[in-house]
Image 1 (cartoon, rainbow, N blue to C red):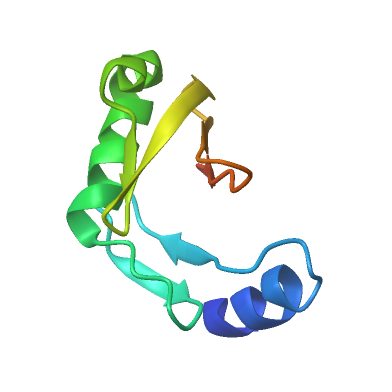
Image 2: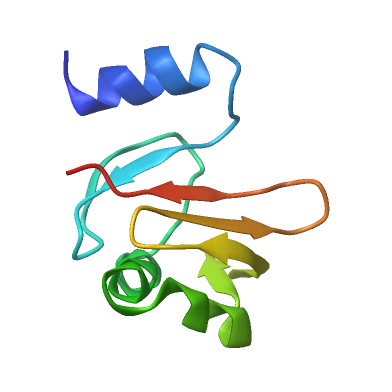
Length: 94
């Protein structure tokens, strides 16, 4: 199964989320849903914080597709942000 098929079938097709993307640690996209406009630099910045100190995002928030989200919690494996009722999740899979 390709990463794009995984996004389309397992993530979007399950109804668990409405937009999704899979990126490498440098922020390069491997697969993403239509209309998901997360930029390489945005994903790379979150990934870098996860590698060093995810809690530092509390001061800046998360920027995804030009939208700012409030930092809720984070560590080296997961970052959770929130904007109204739309929480983005970032998971690092080794």
